[in-house]
Image 1 (cartoon, rainbow, N blue to C red):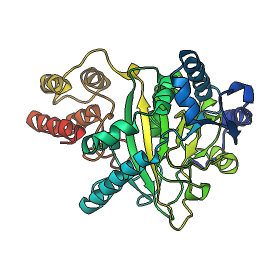
Image 2 (tube, rainbow, N blue to C red; image 1 turned 30 degrees about the horizontal axis):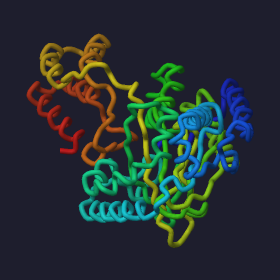
Image 3 (spheres, helix red, strand yellow; image 1 turned 90 degrees about the vertical axis):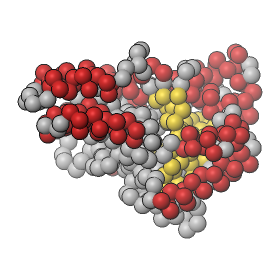
Image 4 (cartoon, rainbow, N blue to C red; image 1 turned 120 degrees about the vertical axis):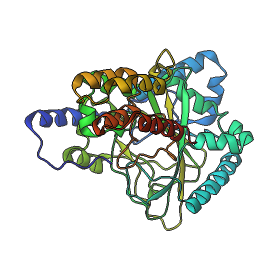
Length: 387
């Protein structure tokens, strides 16, 4: 969880903050979202029946996809689809499965908490999409048959997207999350974020779509997602949103909307947001949190980096880990910790697991034997696959 930074703002960040306030002070114009049934607190609301109808009409489908793309990019950054799964029985059947998995995880000590909330505030199912598909493929087919879901993915990412999902259940009394941006850069420390050039801060958000599928009726009191419309426009938000001025502004100006079972919320991952406090005595607020990824973040070729390390490590072992050694390791290893199985490769001590590259460099610095490194990499590969 990124800590709040209470240090005084410097002159340049003060100017940034003033620009940020101007950007988030916009109002969603009705003519920018003509297919919305209403605009609530600057967030456009769409009806699932309308979306399903538009999906069958090529002209209306194109119009709606363009409208939603603009909402995510330069508009308020979020939208709600009411009744996106019209048959709530489909949602209820999935909920029963998810609750069963949660109970099993509690019995085994498996499962994880929240990246941006205190430990124990909720229950989390990592890789819920695979568990859902393998344990109840019929319900999975009905659940993800939703045109509303597919249309949101297409509007932001185009075809060939990949869906991941993590069920989150915030129990009565669960505390709010720290307001944040999300994956990719949102899962990094400030020092790590600073290593990425500024244009990547904008590119990253265009490679992922965040969403939530409501598995129960969610009044605002149950802690529905707090959002700051238009905040995804602020270019330097990944670095600066931890500062006290931004956090305080969010606390005063963020909005929350109630959701009903079967509704879907989608938003740009750069939108400043966070789950709210669940102050109800009896609502176990369950949502299926989806992260949909663009195909354009993948390399062109498949490489066996374990085999590459097996060949390279003996050449580098015993040398000081200079920048030249780091450069060579970077060319032969996977420097990014995702995708991974977060049940068996958890983000211990931070927001992300340790990457293959970091592990190899650690081994070189510790002068580990080649055989130990190979054993470590085999175990690491198995953990990433959940084996």
